[in-house]
Image 1 (cartoon, protein in one colour):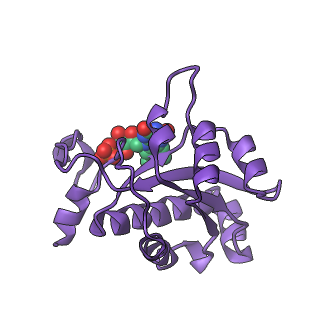
Image 2 (cartoon, rainbow, N blue to C red):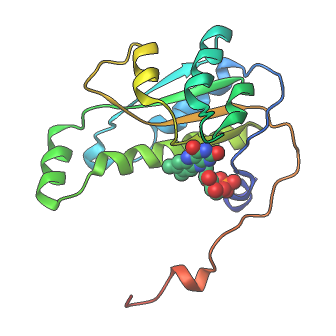
Length: 180
Ligand SMILES: Cc1cc2nc3c(=O)[nH]c(=O)nc-3n(C[C@H](O)[C@H](O)[C@H](O)COP(=O)(O)O)c2cc1C
């Protein structure tokens, strides 16, 4: 598969087969994240693989928000990858303060996409989730208080084989040469 094909194959999967994901496949996704670039090679991340039946069921309830009917599909997800934001190294932190940028959250985004692309290559579907009950997930997974959970990723075998057409802005609307 070419890179272009892989990028096109990756989409947010919101319907999964009732099939467990092999741990080797989950670990390959994390290996892809491990190789991701980060500011000052800080690698400010940890990934919690949630794949045991009871834990998956409980985390799903913290991802589904019945009030606004958001992420209901999470109730039928076979596994989650919970992304933990760790403290950046001192150079990344100081650089970020000087430049007024939060490099860590950029790092997390890149690593997360590495996971999603690796999953797609292995025939798995993912959905990056930003809307979830962070405090509850932290307590449940025993994540220390000072840490953040910026994202949760759902992962499993997609129910539908067909890939949707991507809805995206036109190239001309997002790029320019030599000036804004
Ligand atoms: C930071 C971030 C947070 C997201 N949060 C959610 C979410 O809570 N629920 C959801 O269903 N999709 C969520 N998505 C998926 C986006 O809706 C999706 O990537 C976008 O619509 C493009 O569609 P595609 O991923 O199928 O190409 C999130 C994506 C990102 C990058």
